[in-house]
View 1: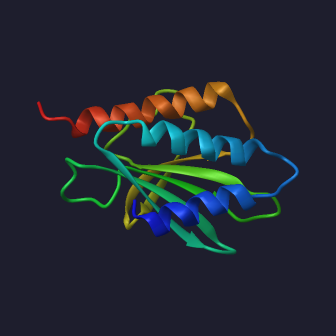
View 2: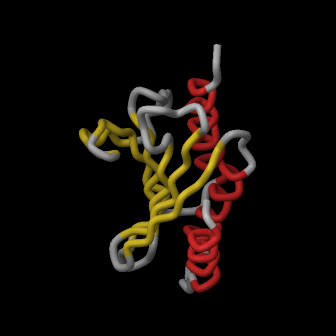
View 3: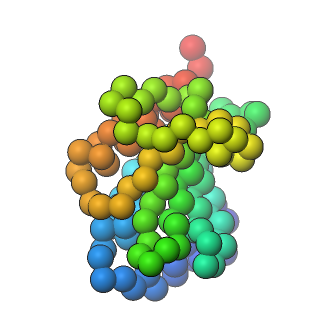
Length: 138
């Protein structure tokens, strides 16, 4: 992430004022979780009033621009939608929604994250790690 984008991301998080801190805390959690993964770089795309997207890509990716997108959805209160390409993860507990053409024009599985839940965080971390395993050389 270049310096300007990183500053924009940090300002977005710092300026995030809302009565419920659940979405903000979870967004920060996933940002930190992804930034610690070897070979992963982050990008941040702000579309004020619509979404704020944190996108993670692995250095071994060649045909896709990301492997997970953590979107902050602007609504009455902000909430998260965390999306993966449907062919890169499993969803053994059926917690996600299949979204045809939902991630940069490809089929996706998206998880709505509206309340802070350690169980859901852990479940999504496992999906992130599952993607990363696919991106590692055999």
